[in-house]
Length: 163
Image (cartoon, rainbow, N blue to C red; front, side, top):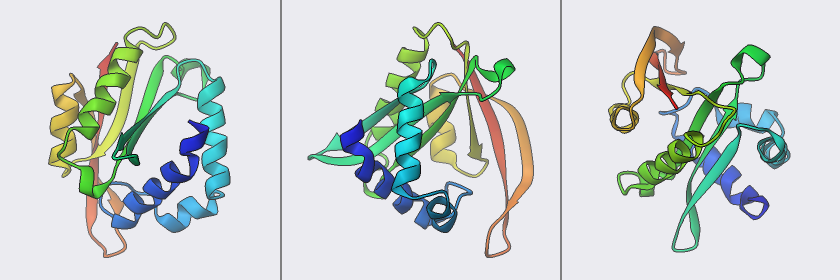
């Protein structure tokens, strides 16, 4: 995982630069500390029960990653929160499926977790289909929760899956 640090950060920046799947901007990510921030996140994942990260490579290139981290408060630690990044040119090729399959299989054996959770834009049909195929169900809807730089409003679904 430490060897993947620079590539994982570069992928994160590239996906955020698309401006379509996440609310964080590249500038906001950079303000957190750039690669130094990613290093802190990697270290947190490595030392935290109920946290893990997977990377996907194709042709030697990092094309995706998925992290799961438990909630930060005692009453939330049973729920692992998922974040997924897949390179634009690797989408639709099974990368997200492979990453999510690894995460779910691991979570089903992880004694500190009883649930996985995530948030996804309500108009991201590809991601919604993937999560539903893995048994995630809609637990909440926040319409017009976000306002893009272009003034467009978007909502999201909160989804969860028992493990």
